Length: 235
Length: 275
Image (cartoon, rainbow over all chains, first blue to last red; front, side):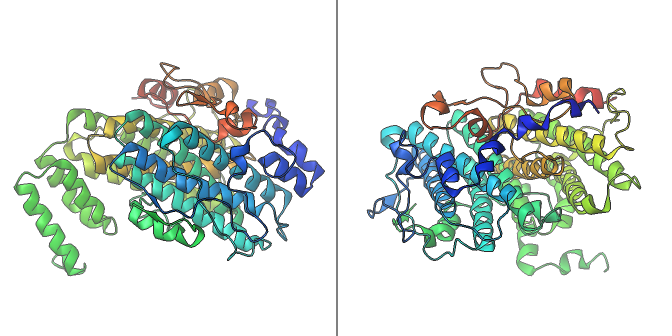
């Protein structure tokens, strides 16, 4: 096939910096740590040594009858996801291959991009930075990192799927659609890493007999992520 | 199992819902509430299949919704037929990858059944397909690499197609939700097939490693490009993502998938559809 004319190196260009292999380099690429200080907002959810971030303790209320409320709901979930990858990649994850780290790095970059986009789009309507807490997780363990990532990505997919019908403005629905399929690509990737070339990338635990992925209402999603969010959130 | 136990074997509460759903239909309930009832029964697809036809036919969906669902059905027919032939062709898919394609095959056939149930008599007929696309993929069912490439083209296009229709379904919240639920399954498929082909599961710029013309169409812009940008787009909602992060185009383009309009999707699918 003519596809072979496309050099694989094109797609792997982001692999190059990883040959340095250092954790420091990972953090620099993620925009975490001291190497780059261009974007102060990107450090807002960075954790301290205890795994607990700065961020507000003041309760946040989401009014899901408005588009701002729904977008802030998405922003809350993206804050959590982004903070998780930022935190996980600070650790030496034992038994994690270079390719797996590369996947985590990219997923983390996507989630940070989602977070920063929603923050920018919401402007003065954005909820504050949430306080997160991953101290219950042993992030030096590969299985813990990937199982938690799987939970966050599957939950993210279900949350966006369930929130789509709450959105009133077509342009916002399109934006949510642009994000949710990337979350689904993450979920499939994480699942494939955990159980390669099996049916798990779209397993029967998340896709029903009609071939439908999960769709969760916010009231179902918030309790799932509550163990990792210190800031009280109600909707 | 006898005929009378079709419902008898189901939880009484569900049976009750089925009955009340029939009642609701008789009373002229809205189509969306009917679909909601159908969705509540997601665990009993047989019951849905048995009921859906008369239910939806009794009170037709709005024509614009029917058009969207028939567009989706056409794409699902394309995909399901493709995997039915591929999985059924001995020696094509290596044993190591069979679980993946059987799972995809199962979902695409489920999507066809689901859409048929929703559309009832309004469903379009199944087209005839040419998976060689007029010879471009001549060895699609004898060369696994070609089969994978066509699979990726279908899945990544399917994601863009469903995404492009979302705003047309806003008047029917439950149909919109179901479409989103299919959309993310297609994205899972796309990611897995891309990984089998040595790519990342997400779309970095327009990288797909498909034959040049196909790659350009599958990952390129729709019409108009201002509403349906190519997959390497990094401006979202008027915000240039490069201005709010310190990332390059690779992660910024991969972080967002792009929708496609119906006409552009049909142009991509056209060479595979004979009639």
